[in-house]
Length: 159
Image (cartoon, rainbow, N blue to C red; front, side, top):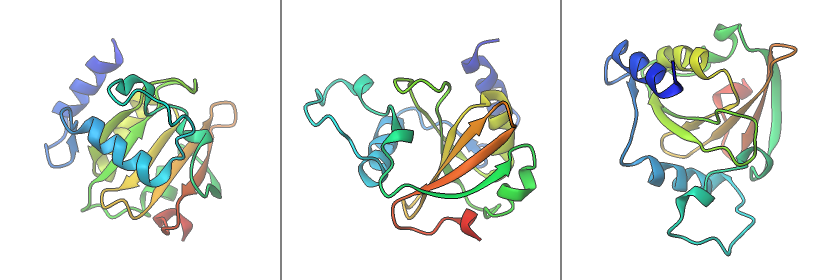
């Protein structure tokens, strides 16, 4: 089953308030995240070609700081830090290649676990008011994730 089909099936398993795919706003959301938390190195990009945007975020995070390393399967260790009543922007990378395309989702923590089980790759969790930004760098060998923050805002994972 293709990733898109798995995500569509996942969407049917949660209330719309818990898991949304912002199709029409996706590009604008990614641009807002990138403007606030990512250093765009190539300013000569063709602004009409969005395929040139939203890649290599992991290497270009503004004020990147390591928070901690966790066992990724211990969901409670990191998900309990998020407010279960609030939705977050979740950006999946879908491969460790710097040029991979990013996908954005509007998720509550309960649907984030299900999304992660499908994607199983690096991902970002961002406050929807753009106050904070976090990056989960996965190591499939050790089954751990290193959590980084970007920008100046305090993330829930720093507790």
